[in-house]
Amino acid sequence: MITEISSIQDWLKANYYKFSSSIKETECYKWSRWNKDQSTHMFPCVCQTRNDDCIFAEMYYRVWQVGQLLEQKDKLVNALLEYENRKGDKGLLKQWFYNHRNLGEGILSLEESIKIATRKEPYVTMEVVLPKEEIKHLSKFKEVYWSLV
Image (cartoon, rainbow, N blue to C red; front, side, top):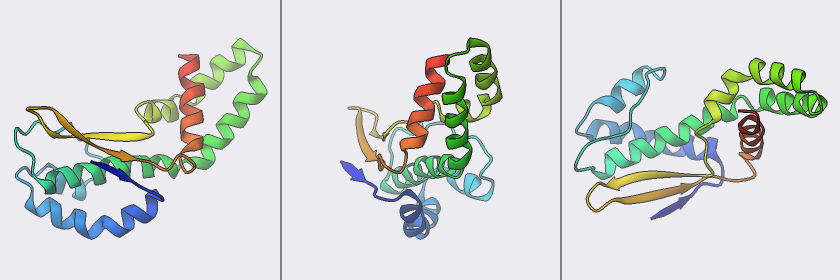
């Protein structure tokens, strides 16, 4: 199954109620803990059987993570402009990399589509396709950052 999202923030707003309802129905309580404290690190689901509510909660969470990155768009654009001005100087690029390591570490796992395991045996996934135009600055920053690693 493939789900395409045209606007991340609109999708998050439109699906918050469904997410809130879903976390009440999941067998594990990690999503309700995360909903109370969004700084909690979430590990991938290891449940043998995943119900639709659990799958939706993970999908919401993964899209929310991208939404959090988008909130830093201005920082990313400014960092990319700095990069363009320092491109020819290895010393300045090293400093740029160091200065933007927090942004870089947060964006390394970004992909244009999110894959979520829906079944372990046989392994089946669903895919959420993110809007390329909306995440273009995130993708460019990731490309530049990775080129310096």
